[in-house]
Image (tube, rainbow, N blue to C red; front, side, top):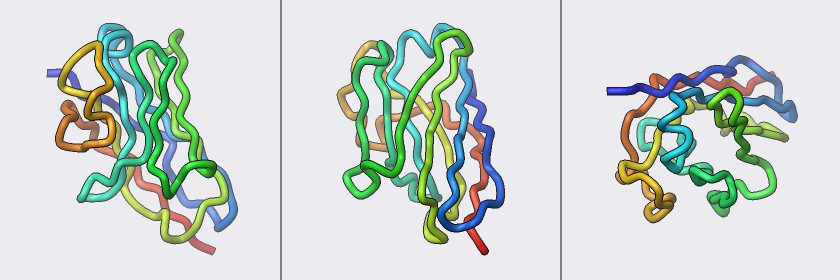
Length: 124
């Protein structure tokens, strides 16, 4: 069973920006909606469709976080700006269990193949 791999976390200061990466197989990248989450409760942050044409964001983060992808690297990125101490958490990615759909994109329980996560710490 494939496991997605996250990277890019670290220690940053309030107000800084950070880009997280989630890499996967070509098959998964081209077939599934991929999402970013944080914390043990898997708070939904953002998702992008398998075509890259649709993006979904948690309302509370819209404008501060952006999701993008690079088909040449089978990678999905989470660009985080104006980071705050309350953004400190373990960030994970996963893909929807069903291929070729974005139904359920906002719902963590609809996702599978969770990565190990990458830690983001925002502190002065």
